[in-house]
Image (tube, rainbow, N blue to C red; front, top):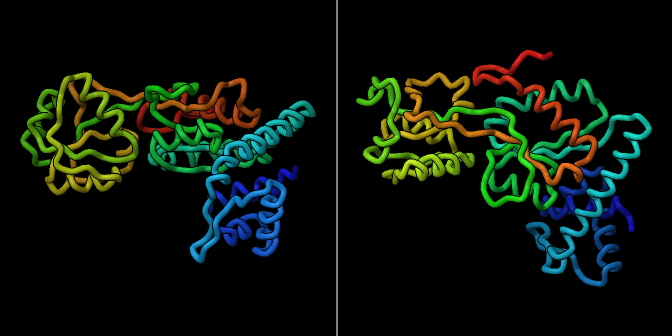
Length: 299
């Protein structure tokens, strides 16, 4: 068993290309092809189908994917624990995040974390809540920023509360109200935004017994904001997304007040690597006291 060969297999499976896997790994394309072929001979069946467009896992390759990923992850943890015992700070942390956390929080968190732990490598992937939680469950990432959802057997560590705000055009008749009653939403054209916040919106509206009159559903929050700006409806957006956006638009508190709790999620904490534990602890310390406007001062 060669762990480096397993790592190449995982990279090729994720990228769908032996050439891209070679470029990212510092190998030649011929070397990667040889390594994958040697794995296929070792296992006794093809792992990939090849075409001009790249490579795709066979059904047998898909069955092997999770097992190989588990072997690689356990090898990473083993070496990190050994380094921790020797007093070294090294390792790799794969992080999933939704877009506004990736834009507003993570650049600063990552910069400061790397200054404290220069030997810990950080990988960041961005997507919506469901995908991030699937990545964690499948051990494709070590931890992820998300809003706590139902039915996921993960450990959720609360980081911050984020207000959910109604977004209406400046000239909307309801924009003069101090807050938008949830009961009024069913009377208005409603735009469903992206990011995964539609989970939080659905939770809020269901708990209030409100069925929105959906006029548009978009996959991008900033597209939803632009549509509100043009008078195509209203939406509900987390406050974190609105930081730094200077648009002629009115962000209103909801009545009653609504929030989402942003968490960092991981598998059972006992299975988390030392490097990941260090990152989670650092993120919690940096976001303690976050007030919706700025990152808290360092202690």
